[in-house]
Image (cartoon, one colour):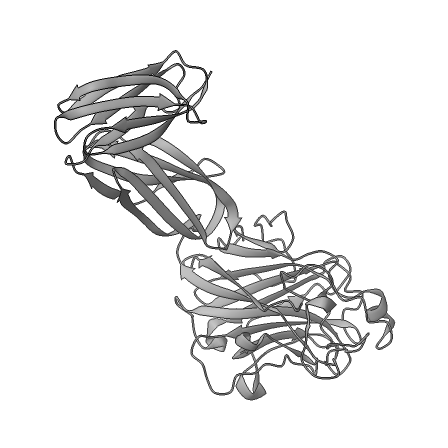
Length: 454
């Protein structure tokens, strides 16, 4: 089964008031902490210029290994392997750093590295392009055709950095691009003025691909290998295994290969990385219980959420903890249902907690529980030996409150008799376990659970 084209969405935070990255083919300024797992990403504050970084950790050793028949020996011995892609942004420029496996071997001429970063802006012109440059025989995903293509190549012996525009109209850009070009560094670094990319993106989403080749003396990509699929040696993808298998055949004889992955990137002008992007927090009543739900668009170092509750203006207290997903760029959904609540106004909020202990409060959700229905509550829950059972009734009537074990066996009757407004009882002297509390009256039947610990 073919691997589906994948899109990854993230928010990259820029700090326009701060400095610029010095483009020197060194990773010294890029101090962010990379993800510890392959084909994963994170946000990190890191550049010496004070800019936040997005870091993609590509799988090590997933580069093409089928270049065994064409091109110079360097293709057969050392196919380039992308280890990281880092992005940062200032008010003036887009910066990128590509970290490879330090196997450039050839700084210029035949076999020199050749990097391509494709960029699609949201306004759709009529003449977008699918093919990458340098006669590579590689295409971007069908929904990621590019408006701008930034390339860095050294095959001719001269560092060539330029932006290809629609219809392959090329123009050099003024930002500096340099490559380490030796076995000690293995870095390719670029600075592209936003003016060369159609202006600053604002809140617009840019769709991007990143791919790495080796060039010949004519600055074209080497192609070849077993059923070639173009000349790309490695590209940013979340597909596991060899890059060859991540290329979709794009023509009948297999000489062209289509990339299967793109990044959806949004740049925000903010001074801090968004640890958790909470897109929804809602609450509804189910009987007299509150059902709370919330959704995150992305999470960074998220330990989880404490649900805080305030009844009738009292101090907030923790009633639930929902573990987070650490760092993820996928939307995540959460839900929690409270026990039956007493009549009154109930206010809830989330306290999001980072792995380092930092916290942030959400907006509040307020729910009003009417007194014209019966309510049943147990506190504390879980308990150690003594559980308070509270029942509020809308009108005077005969009431029975009982406790059952999980098999449905009656354990004890906590109350039986007439109740005018409320009933208070206790569950005690029972073995540890989970009990079902049932309250029955002439106009209602309510159930809840109580957990008794040792």
